[in-house]
Image 1 (cartoon, helix red, strand yellow):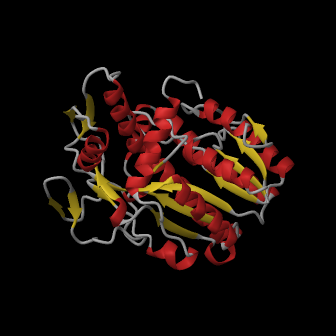
Image 2 (image 1 turned 90 degrees about the vertical axis):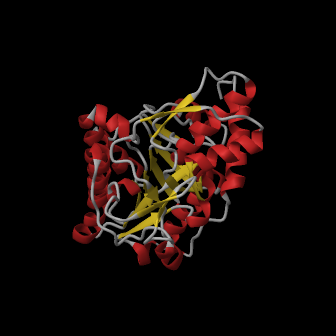
Length: 344
């Protein structure tokens, strides 16, 4: 296949790109290299095979259209985006232009020049808002959504909170509507927490990677004092290792005719859920360290719990996660250690 990946030098994009190359596909990557670590991922990918790289910002409609027109992709993975809620609050216009307008630009280019190509979109659980309408139970280490023991399904109400939730939600709904109105073969994946190698996590995005990095710094004696967390540390997410997500994306392409126009909640499920406190406890035992931290106020619109009920994905895609959280965290730690002090 000829695969085009927007945001192909990001965390998820570079993992998908690597798999595409190793599977013998023709690859085109669009990325403006704005995200921290994207230049390193681009150089890493160059060692994996030959591909076309286009330094394009998805906000540039003309450049996006020209790339789709000239490349004629058979599959589009649309991953380019502004990915941090905190950044969206600091600069709502940039967030809107990248996530909402950028997604519209991609869809319009596909509609005009590649209307038969599947478009798989990376959305977010933030389209469901803060989920404060459902009751919670507080335990010693976590919150529990008592009415949703198997996770949240796709039929709970959409409720966009924060500029990030609004911009990603707009892209999410445009994707579904372009299938309804124009027949474009779109699929929306509403992700929970993804982690894995090639994730250059920051304090406001990629929490598993960020705290694993802090643990490595503590063990190696390079930490500059306690780190901080927002809220109580009992907030819960289900975590999904990147390799499982890659299978999900490519399975969607294989089954596109039966799933076009659908949104799926994608995550590790209840068995792969973690609170911050539970992650810290695991890292302390695994690495023989003390995770010292200070508490900050809750982040605006933060969810106490989000666990994806992936029953729909299992039914229509034949997909479910295989990599357990402990194994994924060990691989994450090994990768962080391998790049410490290097410029990989």
